[in-house]
Length: 245
Image 1 (cartoon, rainbow, N blue to C red):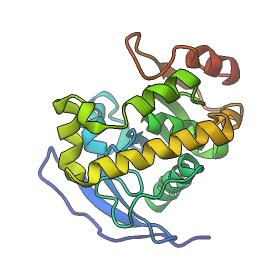
Image 2 (image 1 turned 135 degrees about the horizontal axis):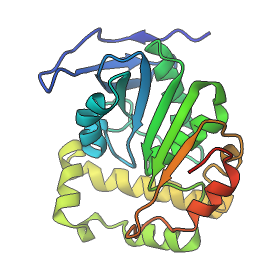
Image 3 (image 1 turned 180 degrees about the vertical axis):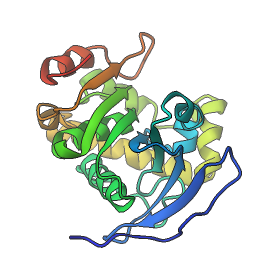
Image 4 (image 1 turned 120 degrees about the vertical axis):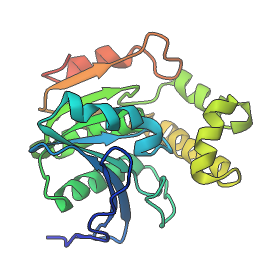
């Protein structure tokens, strides 16, 4: 078994009685997370590309403890994102699968080996992989803005968004606060390169095999005005996940 040791026991911040601290995983990766609530059940919040718990899922961190008093809420910064640095983020064809493994290791390190997941965008993809590869770990799964693959139109749209100067100031400045004006474009371009490589080398397959293995009850949310994620992903997932709404 891998040995997993917390780096900091309880770095308690002053934002609504939550805990922020870090855990060092067995491979040397340091994971920053936010914890809120005192329930016996566990819920892991998984942000999207370049996101952190606070930047992508802040309202959920704040409100879910009231809505789910029997849960403890854990929101992580994925490896190489936000305060889960160093080391720097590493992108390859398996970066979603690597994140899934780290997420499971994190929850085991926290003594919460069985948990539910709420994942948005990349976090939704990672959540699908966790639920498919680590079936015994996941109680329930909620995703939105995510699919099991990337289609041609989505690949084209991502390439069009490579230049962050074309983003709205509101979207760009939020991420610049986390990574800095110089580092953000580099990190984003590396992410786009990785996803495009998956499209070209694996026919866009993020986790098509994993979704067929999911046993946890799954809820999929899709916005009608979502310009990045095609609506075709919803029937695709519903046809392959047994207990799915």
